Image 1 (cartoon, rainbow, N blue to C red):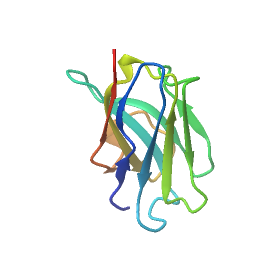
Image 2: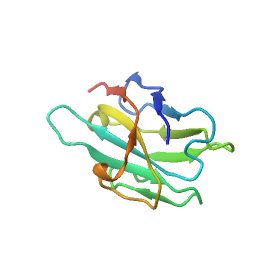
Image 3: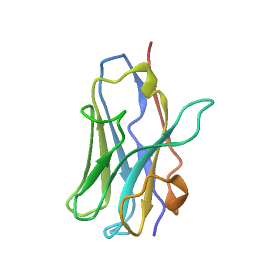
Image 4: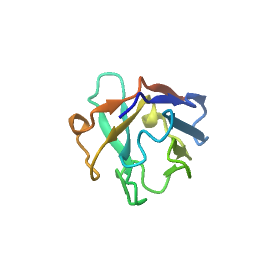
Length: 122
């Protein structure tokens, strides 16, 4: 358990790439499943992808083939590489952690970052 901080968001052209980072001090989430969610204006928060401590992954259909999740050797940083971005990817992206297996429900993740804005030009 620890506070999470996202970074790497910004403005990008359609078809471009961004890499988001989620960081916590020490190894606070070394045993956690880490997830990325996003929330666009007027829409509910939705699951994007998650990764377990054993490096198992599960991607939402919207992310398959374009996004890649990874975590560093010390388990202090989780990344979301986003390629071939679309206008529909525009949202605030949140990093979240839970002490268990992969889950697509936002309310199953007790720890959250403050979010980072991703804007894809139309």
